[in-house]
Length: 198
Image (cartoon, rainbow, N blue to C red; front, side):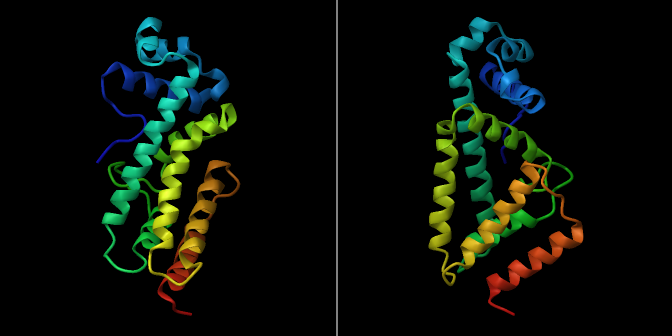
C-alpha cells in the first residue's frame, strides 16, 4: 500500500513534494516558496527547478500526487467490501466513520491524522488557484459515478457520501469534533439507511 503524501522516498522530486507539503501544513500556501522547498528538501534551487519550473507547477504536482493517493485509497477501500449492491457506499462509510489505524499502515480514515497533510494541500491549492483541484475533482466524479451505479435506492448512496463529506469538512475546518459515541451513533444510523432497516 502506498504511504501517500509525505512518503519517505529519497528521490529528489519526492523529497521536494514532501518538503512543500510540510511547509504548507505549517505555514500555509503563503509560506511556500521554491527556495524554502528546495532548502527543506536538501536540493539546490536549480535541482528543484529541473523538476518543478514554478510554484504553480509544484502545487500542481502536489495535487496530482494527492489525487493518485485518494484513488488508491478508494480502490483499496472498495476491494475490502463484498461485491453486490451498496459496495461503494459501504466503502465510503468505512472511510468516513471507520476507526483510524494506530500503526499508520492501514487505509486512510477521515479521523486519521495522516489526513491533515492531505487537507493542508487541498486548502492551499484552493486558496491559490481553484483550478488546481481538477485532478481531485476527477477522482470525486469517479466516486460519484460509482455511487450512482451502486444498486441502491435513489439518494441512499448520495446521503451516505454527503455525511462522509460532512465529517471531512468538520475535521478540515475544525468546526467540531464528534465524540466516539456520536460517531458510532451516526455510523449505525447510516448503516441502517444502507441496509434499508428502520
